[in-house]
Image: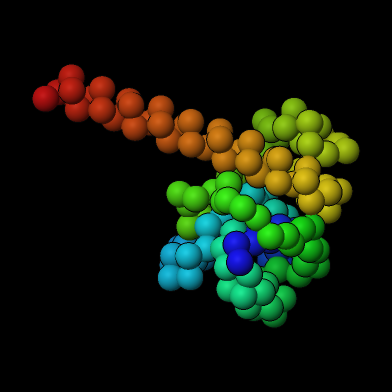
Length: 154
């Protein structure tokens, strides 16, 4: 059964960009092997993550996450059966939460600060989906710029 899991947590230590890249590489590798897709938002302190896949695979992964010492205060924001994936092309999309996204936080949350603990499950999904669309648009623009550059030099 296809399901969606959304959770928030807090990093137990400061994560520099290299550590975040390592974490993402591990997650992507695991998720590709288990047909799990999703997205992660991180602001150097808090994680907000959505995962989509087989219910048993998500249950097993969440069990592992509860014992992962890289984060604490896991808060389950949602777990539900779904008809289709919202992040089908990503083994793990990523967005860095920053102050420039204040309007997004206000749109989906109670404050202008990124605080996943103040989000409902539907609001968290809305924020993740919105950032996913933004990231896909950025990738598309980057890809078009690359194609234009190749065409100009080719």
